[in-house]
Length: 414
Image (cartoon, rainbow, N blue to C red; front, top):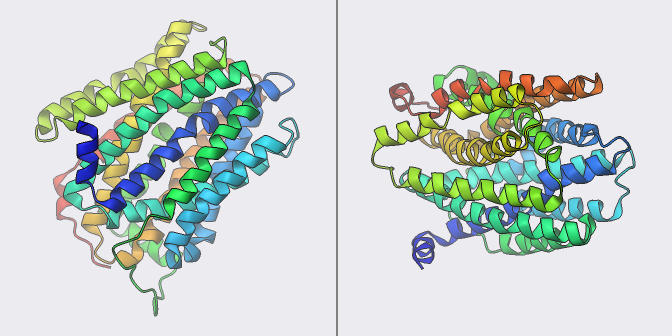
C-alpha cells in the first residue's frame, strides 16, 4: 500500500516512464545472463566467444548508430522511443527462429539490440531530464529502480524454472509478450514540454563536441561516460563475473536465483540510501563502504580460483552494487543533473547525450575486446587479473559522481 501511495504522488508521465523501464529490465535477465548461457551452450566448445562478439558488435553499433540517427532522434524523439520497442520485439523473434549456432546469429541479434538501445535510451535520458524536475529526480530514480529490482527478483527465477524444465525458446515467448506489452504501454506517454525547435540550427556534431570540451562540467560528463563503460555499465568487469558464475553453477535455475538475490540486495541498499537523503555524510559513509569489495572480490577469486562461494559473491555484488546501484541510480542521476543544471540551451541535449553514449560504447568495446583477445589466445586464467585491473576505475567513477562546488558554479550558456 505504501508503494502504491508513493506511485500516486508521481505524475502520469513519470509513472509511464517507470513502468516501461520496469518492463525493459524485466527481460534484461534473459537478454544478458540467460542469453550468455544459451550462446555458450550452443557453441561447439562451450566457449563465451560468441557472446562476447555479440557484446562488442552491439556496443560498437550503439556508438555508431547514436551519431547516424541523431537527426531522427532529435526531430522525432517520441517516435524513436516507441520504435525502440519494435526492435525489441524483432530481437526476441530472431532468438526464436534463427539457428543459434550459425555464424551470423550474434551479429543479427546485436544489430537489433543496438537499434533498441539507442532509440530507447537517448529519448529516455531526454524525457527523464525534461519531464522530471531536479528536486524530484532522486525520488523518481530510486522509486523506479526499486520497482525494477522487484521485477528482477521474480522474473529470473521464473525464466530459470522455464528454461530448466522446457527450453530457452519457450522462455523467449514469455519475453516476447513482455516486449509487446512494453510497446503498447509507451503509447500512453504524452510529453508535457514541447521540444525546442531546431529550425535555423547550424551546429554540427563536431561543434557540439568542441563545445563540450570547452566546459568543465561537460568534460566531466565525457570522463564519467567513458569510465561507466570501463567498470559499471555492461563492461568486461561485469562480463567476467557473469562468465565466472556460469562456470560455477549447475543449472539455469541457479543463475536465476543468484540474479534474483542480486536484485534483493539492490532493494535493501537503495532503501537505506534513499532514507539517508537528507543526511549527506551518512550517505557518503554508505557509499564509500561499498567500494572496497569491487577490488577485493576479484583478488579473492584470483587467490582461490574455482571457488563457487566467491564466484557467487562476485556475481551478486557486481549485479547489485556495481550495475544496479552505482550505475543505474547514482551515475545516471549525476549525468542528468549535469544536463539539467548546467546546460541552458535544451536544443543541445540529445546531441550531448549521444556523444556521451559514444564514449560509453568506447569504454565497453575496449574492455570487452581485451577479454575476448585473452580467451582467443587461450589465456582464460588472466580474465580475473584483468577484472582486478579494471576494478580500480571505480575510484574516479565515484569521484566524478559525487557533487562538487565546481559543478554548482560552472554555469554554461549555449
